[in-house]
Amino acid sequence: MKFLFSVKFLFAVAMFVFGMVSLAGVNLFFDATNQMEFCTSCHSMKTNLEEYKETVHFKNASGVQATCADCHVPKSLLPKVQAKILAAKDVYHEIMGTVDTTEKYEARRWQMANVVWDKMRASNSRECRSCHDYDNMDLSAQSKSARNRHPRAELEGKACIDCHKGIAHTEPDEPEEPEPAAKAEG
Image (cartoon, rainbow, N blue to C red; front, side, top):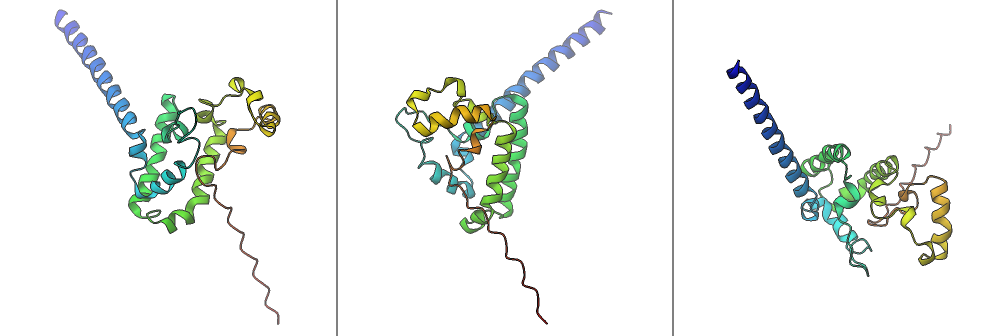
């Protein structure tokens, strides 16, 4: 009986240690892949990096900087894991050459931006709100337009991205619809 108890106890300890080591490994992976240097190490992300460097999220009077992960990776574990899994498609497209030139990247920019915007709408701009929350806004310090629009946006349940597209990256132009083919006369 003692032997059986010892085996079960040792197994429980081993599983606990394995779980802790696994959790530490996952956290190390997330920390490494959330660094801006990692995010922008792919050729296709150089375009985003250069655009970002020209925005208030990169350099501003307060010295606070929002990095790639601040805007694109949720803080909560399950949404973070989902975001990391979905981010694998970016690596796939880089490897497959889908976006490996500026021309290819620009050709897909509208589609890629809409995927991100839809994700931000679905989460009610959760990542934006980790820094920008309606309750913490000092409307008196905002421009007249912002003072009028922010309370209205909150009442209407708008996500940040509904008004602030192009805040950290160049907003792509919506592609023009192809002209309908003219009917052949005859």
